[in-house]
Length: 185
Length: 196
Image (cartoon, rainbow over all chains, first blue to last red; front, side):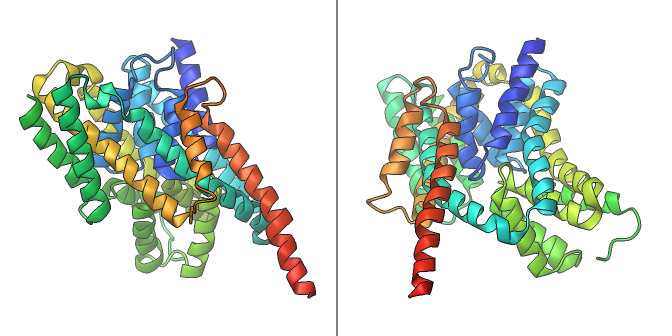
């Protein structure tokens, strides 16, 4: 049990330390560190997708939401697991931000940061794309032909609404849930 | 700065409210924090806020937590940064913890109604992740020359091969490569331009 806590903390320290590019880019780190890992079989691609859905529909950043939920589930229903993962994901950036705001002057940091972010931008696009690719599987789109067809239609429809209109993602998730209730039951 | 009594409590409560009422984190949260801290409470000047935002953005981690940390630190040092960042985190922590307790993966699996609802939701969530691929590609000015970078990164991570599929590799390579390119090409070109 202690081993699970340590692995969870180590995974979230890394996710916090390398979490550049916002919540969606962080998804790819969480997938690599946690989803499908031997110490945390409870978090499958499907459960991970459900966590993203829950995160979208509740207040707060996805990084915190996923840490809290995964920490609880990974440690067998433990509030301490939630707390450990959440503290681990915020600790490295917290210390770095404090250090940066005191010791790095604007001038000396600008070349490093400008250059680094120039290189990070295309990488972040790839990270988000990999997160999407890894979630397009039988766990999320079903395994029978009718299920796959319905799921692909829901995915394409949701994409159209999110990308081309200003309708809030929460409404898209609720609508997809309602449609799911009628077509999958 | 107009905070006097119970500063830490005020910082905590302000960021707690922001954490409780903002959906989605990130930029949605930044605009609310700006309105609350700069426009309503006048704790920090607009220019100062933009400087702090630049620091928060240039560090890894969760943007909303990072900006709370720098603002708390600017106002009341390390204790202030703790009060502000814990305030931002606590609402989502408590809400998700309650959901985790009552809506476990098994609860969804063993309930036909929830299973059907989530079967509908999952493809929509994938769509919600595809959309920012395109919007971030546009804002990063990806063209036909640089498009190879995100495609290679995505496919190598997707491959699930040991080491090669670790996103941290590409974050480090991207940052280091970007820095070297910037120092060797962009800065040099600028200097050469100045000499002419």
